[in-house]
Amino acid sequence: MNIYFVCTGNTCRSPMAEAILKHKNLPDISVKSAGIYAMDGGEMSPHAQAILTAENISHQHKSKQLKEEDIAWADVILTMTRAHKQMIIDAFDDAGGKTFTLKEYVNATDGDVSDPFGGTIHTYSATFEQLRQLIDALLLERGLVDEKGV
Image (cartoon, rainbow, N blue to C red; front, side):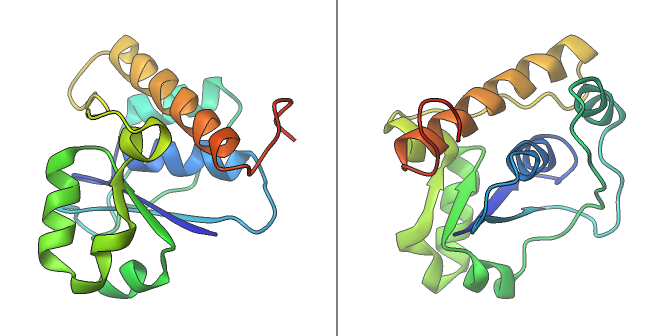
């Protein structure tokens, strides 16, 4: 399964989500991330890096702009907000049936993943925890792991 996480600048939420899922080392799951308004080659937010490092999650990231070839590559596109989802569906003809907000895909609820950009380390930590819980739920609900996380 190819999973593509998308946020605004690809410096906070989507790279943290990508790192969290990659860290699980699951076979048959490939992960990428991008930003709708990302500048290619930018650094991940220092607070996002600090949180991942504190959680012993390896990360090497350069921001990437959303690309049509990655839309085609993805089996599922998981956005951080409803606005991101709508922008992708409007811009890419083949994205409609596979683009969801992360919250929607996990538990059919509407809502956005909070944006920590410009916030404190505590703000980033809260977003990280939200992402970790959503990704754990995604894996469990989609049958990609069992209750023990295996």
